Image (cartoon, rainbow, N blue to C red; front, side):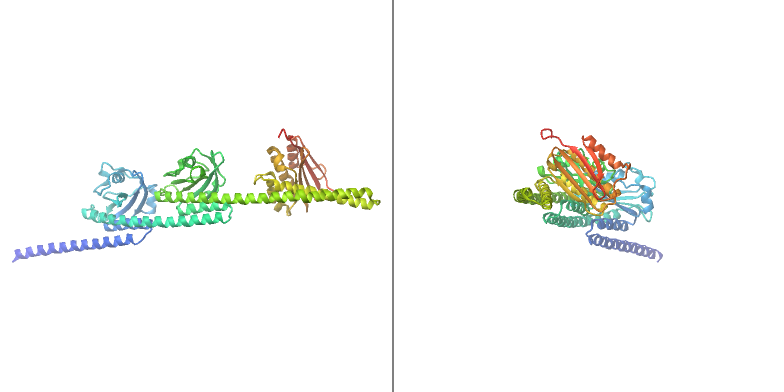
Length: 558
């Protein structure tokens, strides 16, 4: 009886072992199904990838797991997601693998790979200092449609054994299911970004075409580009007139302050994108972004407009070691930049039309002032002058003469207004520069000074004299604010009779005898450089009158 009993025990043990194996297989199948459901229940790509690595390590009972996303050139890894490696170990490693050794072998030969000892394989590249020890290895490619998206890497089974064929089958099945989940997440991410780009395009177009200033809208373009492209830095650079230099007109993100107003030559990637009209992506943007001491990682540059209508470039960057910009982001940014360029062009044409209408209105007002008001005032003054000759009383003559002088002064002021109205110069005109300067010093003075500009400032004053004049006006008004203790200030600029005369009058404490100020010396030196003079005198009733007088070139010398 002992022999049959022994065989029965063996059969029962074998049956129990098979039941345990079936139960383990069932459990792994259930775990695999749960993992597939888990990674497919979210549409955020980053979340899907992290769940995939975690599920793979659990199914294979591995201590360490990682997922490497392959670059478009199919030669390296551009993203590396890990499970099981702590923060201290990450800091000790220094940088993630780029696709050498066994990892590179899986990129070149995308098929499942099991190894009992990583270091014994001839393709082994070794580990950097601080890397945890790893022996057993299982690598499985992840395919999205017909494209290898990346690879799953598992090392070190927790029980110390080698990875088995069953581990490879389960992880390969998970990778197959993950390909569908990754594709869904990528499509959802692309649709969501496209929607955000469309919303941003509508926002930019509305802001521009509703009459908004171009400056704030361009800043909005930079901000939205950075946000929608998931970048850390974005900027808009417009080409100068000659096309050999770019000026940064808006920047947003980290270190954007360093880029405000920066200029750079077109020799880099921006010039190439602008001239060729084709977008460019760089995995390391330092080669195309070497200015302002700004360090960037992946870089995407697209032209702002197409062909001869191109206005500049839009650039967006990520931090070093960040994910490279993909095709989808490039296409969306190209479409957005094209729409933004059209909106900028339309807004500029609308502003040109408004400017033309304004100038025409100003011309009409100037003609009316010149042909009607001045002529009537001049006729009235002539009548009063004739009346002086026939009056018998001195008091009447004095009053009439005062009225004539007032009319002359009124005529001069109206002529100054006519000159200002007829000046078609833009923001860089001499009149505009002086008014901007006066507006800027008003807060420092505590009151608005009186300003009168008479003559053809924007027509016959050379650039050199204009630059000196602006500097002298700034210095004179600053002296009034710092030293005069004045409650009122008047400034006039007269152009005529071959000279330019600036007068600044205040009702302050005046200049003490023997007092020497550096500002006065600078203004006098500027006058001497131009062949002119600087004079200071006491104003009637107290204060100072500063007169800065320089000659102007004759018409045939100008």
